[in-house]
Length: 160
Image (tube, rainbow, N blue to C red; front, side):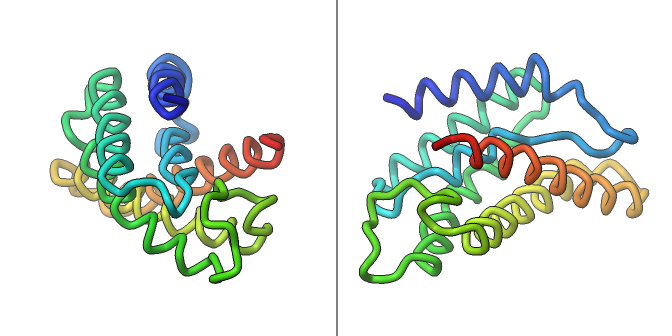
């Protein structure tokens, strides 16, 4: 239930506020990716994929990006449990929500950076099928990745 509420809040936040931020014309914060990072290891994979799909679809409807966020979020939702298991030991409580407090700064920063990078590469690569300028493509990936990670790290540091 909490994830459905978060999907609504993050989709509206992205559509009404963050989607209109374009630093230097290329960097846009994609904060809704943060939801895919928060699933605990024991969360059912089918539910995780369904919620990531719903989040991507919600953002696509509001942002008029037909399928880009849906495909990218579903892929991140598929990869997340496998990547998270690399950062959890057998002794760790697998019901924990990933974050700075539960994983530690280095592990969470690496985990978040990998997933956000995958998301940005897929999202902007699909978008770039109509764009020939590869430098703008690279700047969009790098700028949006850095901006998104800054937002994620800031929110996660005050979360608990």
